[in-house]
Image 1 (cartoon, one colour):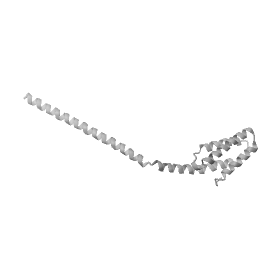
Image 2: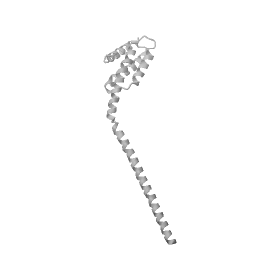
Image 3: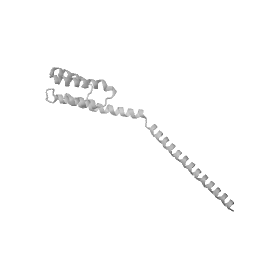
Length: 150
């Protein structure tokens, strides 16, 4: 009888061990499938975000912002009298404002020219060369003519 009980106990142990291994295997398989589905859904979300479309929208926004802000900044600067006492400060502020703008490719040349002319005006004001400052401002006015809103 002891032998029979030992055999039954061993069978129960084997069945329980088989069930534990089966549950662990199924749990591992389910965990793997869950992680796999998360990876796939993350990849599909990245595919939806087409960087070329985002770049086109971003470039359009940069161009609109530039076309709105550049004429305003330069127009305010050109309306100021050269003889005013704070013209040097205004020149530095205007240059800083222009340097803070994001520039679309179509306007890079004129933007660079404008900033360089403002740097020249700063140098000329420090030297006290008013005649050359007026010549540089006329160059700025030519650049401003390409923007009808100035």
